[in-house]
Amino acid sequence: MDTSDSPRMIASETTPLLPVDTSKKPKTPLPKRQIGILMALQLAEPIASTSIFPYINQLISELGITGGNDAAVGYYAGIIESLFFVAQALTVLRWSRLSDRIGRKPVLVIGLSGACISILCFGLSTSFWGLVISRCMCGFLNGNVGVMKTMMGELTDSTNMAQAFALFPIVWCIGGFVGPLMGGTLARPQDHWPVLFANSFWGQHPYFLPCAVAACLFVLALFMMLIFLEETLSTQHRPKLISATLGISSCESLPRQSMTYTPLRSLFTPTVVVPIANYAMLAFLDVSFRALLPLFFSTPTYLGGLGFTPSSIGSWLAFFGIMDGIFQALFFAKIVDRLGPKRLFCMSVSCFTPIMVMFPIMSWLVSTREGVDHAVTFTLLCQLVLTVVWDMAFGTVFMFITASAPTNTVLGAINGLGQTSASMARAVGPALATSLFAVSKEHNLLAGNAVYVVLIMLAGALRWLGSQLPDEIQDRDE
View 1 (cartoon, rainbow, N blue to C red):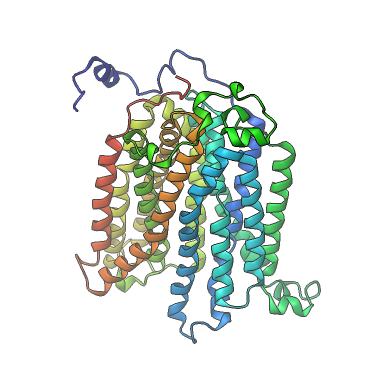
View 2 (cartoon, rainbow, N blue to C red):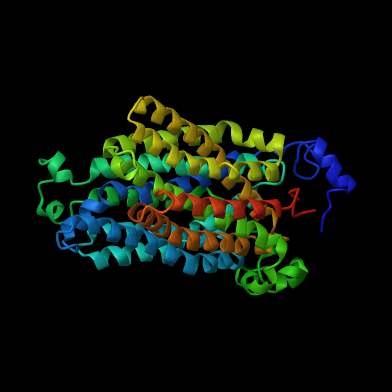
């Protein structure tokens, strides 16, 4: 239904889109201690997950599963990473639903413990199937991402939600910087510090040390959570059975709606489905871009790539991550307050098309062979700016998903649905994007640029989905 002529929409055309009544209500102070602890717990995950990137290809080669074919290493590495997302997609909703019943902290205990055990098993693995099982274990037992977003939603309201959710991409940027640095430095310690690591154990398990350090971070996070983090799901919001086990004998003290467990099918309403569909498509396009970027960097120039060395690729990726994190930390909340979440989301996803266009532009610049270094550097910087704006879409879509929950009793389930959809998208995105890239180059489809055209078309679908988001974010209490 077109509401463009309604008084409500006319007003929104002349004033920034803001959460409902935000201009009238003072901004609620953030519970800094609780959010700080929550972000410290979150930081352990990207550090551990990205710490395997520097040595995973070498580890696979040394296991001898490729038969000496170095070209097949990337295939096996991709399988290991995709299986994590597949396993997570199969279970993250169940963990989020469980957190609605027994509380957030017990599920986080299971998740942190599972991640700790799985990373230790990864470092001790001496076969490809050992690596696969350990990564699947991490995906199956780890529902922390969805639960942490749920807790963030319970710790905030519409006046300070943007400021809080801006912290998630910042934490992932920090983890994406520290993790590879840690993994690359501590891998094969017997080569770097032969006196300290002379035991034969380190020769049999040369990549155990970075995994052990990552496991220690999980143990530290677990104790920090148990001691300092407060439960955000009140016993008054839990189902009757669980409340009884916690010693709440009077059923009259419970809200009527919390007496029953909400069926999952009742959540499939447009209010919930539209933000989750936006998140899934956003995750798919983002992970596709993240997979294409280093591939494009490393592809030889005669195939339309940049032919960068591994050190140059690492430097550019680290630079992208650092600048992205700094920008999100300093400006995201202010921009949301000024533009409103829906307008910012639509503006952010609109940047994906020019991001893709930058790839063939750089290919053309390399082919000219004149002034290529400065021109490519300038184009990469332009792509960086667009990527920073694109990444603001994540903070806004998290706000829409959280606000779509009618009550806190289903907030965990809704975040679980969102994380499940995103995990499925991330399991498919890298393989599909890199395969399309290879086919485009091999068969010279659209001058080798067919992969970008396909992704741009999908970005158009995301832009349309963004237009279906609500104009305002409302508090669940209202």
